[in-house]
Structures are given as C-alpha cells and as structure tokens.
Length: 312
Image (tube, rainbow, N blue to C red; front, side):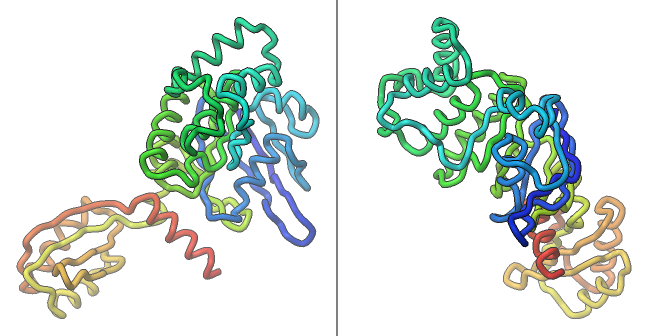
C-alpha cells in the first residue's frame, strides 16, 4: 500500500530525511518511532504530497507521489499534531464541511457517514456543540473523524496522543485499534510514545537524524537490540558470586540492585542459560530466594538504540 525508495528531503545543508526505504502492506498498522527531529513528520508530509522529496520516490495506494499527487491526496487521510478544526462550528458542521471538501456530494450519504463515525467515537450526543467547547481529547477524536470521513485506504496519524492525559491517551489508543479493524485501512502512525507503538503496530521503523535504523515487529526489535534478563533475588550479593558470573562466557552483562539484593543478568538464550546461571550462583555459596526472567520493553530497546546512535 505504501512503498518508498531512497526517500530524501533536504533543507539547505540539513538532511531531514536521508534515503529512507520501506514497504507497508495493505491493512497494516505501521509505526514510525523516533525522537523529535528524527524526520518522522517530514516523511509523512512527503507521502501525503504536502512537500516534495529532494531525491527518491514513493507510491501510496498505487499512485506515485510525484506523478499523481492529486490521486494520492484523494487516497489518504491525515491527522497532524494540530487538530485543525473550526472552533466556532459545531462538531456536526465541522464534519459536514470536511466531508463535502473530500467530495462526498450526496447529503444523505454524508449524514450517514458522519453519524456512523460520531457514534463510534461517542460524540453523537455532542454533535450540536461547538468544537471550541470540547476538551483536547474530544478535539482529537473529531480530528481523527475528519481524517477518515471519506473512507481513505491510507491514514496518516502524526502523534495522535501527544499532549493528552493518560486516560484520554488510552481512550484514543483503544479507539484507533478498533478503527483499524473497522475501516480496514492502512495506518502509518508516527509517535515517540512507545506504548502507542507497542499496543497498536504490526511493525515499526525506528528513525533518528533522518535515517532508518531498524524495521521489524516490536518483539523482534526487542530481541535484536536488547538481550533478555534473568533477575535473581538473593539473601545477599557477594564478590564471589559476581566474580563467578562474570567468568561465565554466556553472561553478557551483570547489574546489581543492592537495595533489593537482586542481580540482573543479561544473556542471549534465556531458556538454555538460566539453569547454568542458577548453578553458578549456588556453587559460589549464594542463597537464592527467587528467579524471574523477562525481556526488555520496546521503550528500553529503543532508548538503548538511540543512545548508541548518539555516541557515534
């Protein structure tokens, strides 16, 4: 549904997006992850034909962004960081205006579609209230409705939960997951909120300084960037135990939590190595109270990757 090849955008000497190449399948929820200034919004603006690439190209919904920009614009819905609503108009009037702008000429069809979406987003009872009276979370719902009112096959969501309180952010996240299933559209979600990506995205692309660092499923990226962890709770941590663990060539890293008398042991193969680690500690006269295994969160993996990039 979306394919880019060496997509690049420069502003003078600044390269905002640097030879980015990826493919997004039909119906996929695809995440753009990266810190502010990574190039996420610039990439979306090129794909939505709001700006032109300096080099490279892309197709969206089967249309080349340089050869058929009007067809691309007709095929996408876009949510920017600013909801861009007319605050003196009611919720219904806003949606009616944008539906007409998107080419839905039949008034009956417009009404049916607007009611369908306002009910889905629990805003039908507020349809006659002015948008300016809405909370930030409600305005964000309206902005998502505006972007989807013409049933686009591709939806671009740029930081949809930015600036929302945790409860509103969760509600928007849950609604986006339902919307993806309901509308059967391809969604490109740009965010630096890792929880959004982890809960919504089939795959994610991690960006920094305009470059693509990694692409894959969230679970795959966690495994590729960060080794799994064995947490071992002891009666006490001794130098003998630490030396024994560090001498084991299957141990990648050992960190301590002295206040809890716990060890965090990083390994590659958690299932194969855990029994050996336990045996090593027991042979070093350690008294084990408990053993837990876990993998790094996507956020931890992401931060590790970005920090590694910053050091280069």
